Length: 400
Image (cartoon, rainbow, N blue to C red; front, side, top):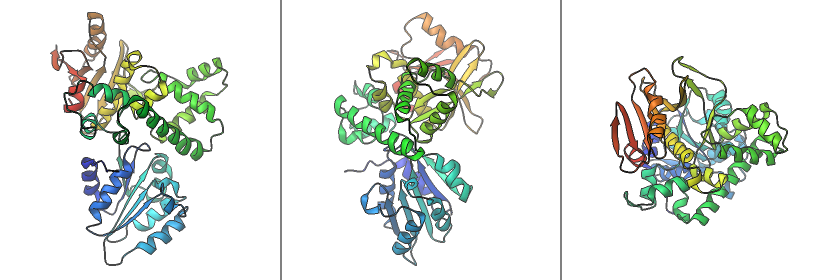
């Protein structure tokens, strides 16, 4: 299989080599971390000794604990060379963090690992090596990467529709953009993620409820929801689940990067609320498979999800904006102090829609940039009394 060259990630990883830090690639299963690691392996094998372990290959089944891992690395180690230790899906090795602690600070050694569960950073890995690692978050393909790898012209009339429908999972390049085949492939990723990264890892017994919960989250992507309301809904369909259990399950789904939780931010009070969040899927194609139906029935929430993921890709920390007069889809900030406000819309075809989308932004009394992003025909980049109306395709290609 031809490897997809995602050069921007290779460049970021290369920047951190040789700094006595463990490098951890995180992201949803099948998002392309393994390909990035193999491309890096090809590059670094010309410079030193690469010790490569892929826990999804049966030849490495015997490496089950950190002791097995230590033994394998010792056997492959070459004195006098720079050793690059690369481990794909490292969370499948019990107490792997002990090995990382042993090797990441060795002279002439770099440790690069991938993982599909955020918990390994927040607890397992961070506990033993503290701040001695750097996390590089790998997302599905951007729209420009999608065009490149599917060999679609930038002006292809259906390119944006394909991206909205099927998302950016790299493996679609081999499967193709036929709806039946694409959906089967995306469903297999979802099933594997749910089984390996949620059910098995957390020893969940009520997997049937978990499936219903994910279905609910797909149906309500981009809506403010609470665990209490979900609990009430579940009771209405015969499932008695407490809000505490629902919160715990949601946490597991975000830890495996299937979902992103987005908290509300009080724009005037400048504080975060602790309840009623929004959730967005890591990949809209997987979300669409779970939700079913046609995109003309839920296009606004899908567009909102696509915009959210691209804002994250651009390096923004994203929250839902709360005003007394209404809600702003996204309040986006960076550590530098940069801030923008973004409203996501489908088509602004009448004054009622225009007032809803632009009017809320006008109620924000500061001078930070404000944007409305839509696929309104004939709109590329227009100014509306200080608010920029930006076409979705242009935003995905050129940014803001």
